[in-house]
Length: 210
Length: 210
DNA sequence: TAGATTGTTAATCGATTAACAATC
DNA sequence: TAGATTGTTAATCGATTAACAATC
Image 1 (spheres, rainbow over the protein chains, first blue to last red):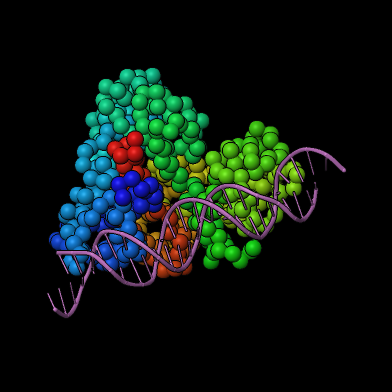
Image 2 (image 1 turned 90 degrees about the vertical axis):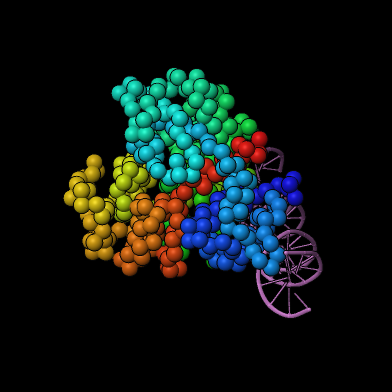
């Protein structure tokens, strides 16, 4: 099982299972069956068992899954038992808002660096205490502060150049908010967040689907 | 062809094709083959032809696709030949940042209403001229200002209640930024934007994939 | 006409779901 | 032991890609 190729969809669902399980934990639920968990997550029970089976056996036949154990096991699978350091590149409206967003910290992601090119912004202190540095210092600080993941919130025109610099600095994971497809070597994993594509999809459903 | 079930993935790719085609248009490219377009979009040429075939015949055999025509045809398919009115519910960091985000306007999406529950915020004027209203006025203003799509950027705990109110106000499309799965009737189409799931996926790739 | 590229069918690939033996 | 639910195999479903006849 260990060496089967894991579908991307499985990885994304594991995050969703984990969140639901964390909620259940707060409600003092000890044990849950794949059937009940599936209902809460809006998926098929067999789907959950299959997803987990890629990584091992985590349940007890005839009983179900211990909620707290399963949370920890999914964290282990996803690599969330340790903190990850983030750098934000681009401190316009979106970047500044995201860096203040409590959700990242809650999930174990910590901003340890922030960059912009605007001399007006460089040197300023953010609400979380971080000081904005100039992009010129990107490589040096990324290494010094052990940044693992870069978040790009620059204008689309700058995104590729920033991505190149991140890769040079040794970054292997990028979350790209700029509405362009950025090219990186295979060693680097890019995820895109694109609001307008989602809106286009809603527009399609509103005009034709209905 | 008209009545085949269209894969969601096809709709999302159409947005991507459109954006690439718009870039090509600015570079004065007149005609493009599925092969060249595919390379630029990072997909398979047959994929593009198949996606388009769900909706009709838009190319010329032996020649390719006229860029400007194809842009318009995709806009037609997605329902983007008309403007769509948006309402933002929740004007914390994220909501305020998104409402200032130029990309929405550029793609034909217009904010015509903004809501919050905080009395400190209600009555304030946003940079785009819009005044923040109290959520109590949601149903009335949604109808009055002909809002088509609601964007939820409230805390997770409020998201479901807001979604219910939106549906009651006649809204059929929701873009949900709150990290919860919201339940709506079938008539309403929900898309979710969840940063932490994307980060989890990057964390997984960094710790195991590499 | 010869060359090129579409539209479309058929083959392949991968992901989801149903079913059930294993087992707590 | 009887009842329940997992882990896993096999069946189904859907999406992607290759191949090629149609045709500009």
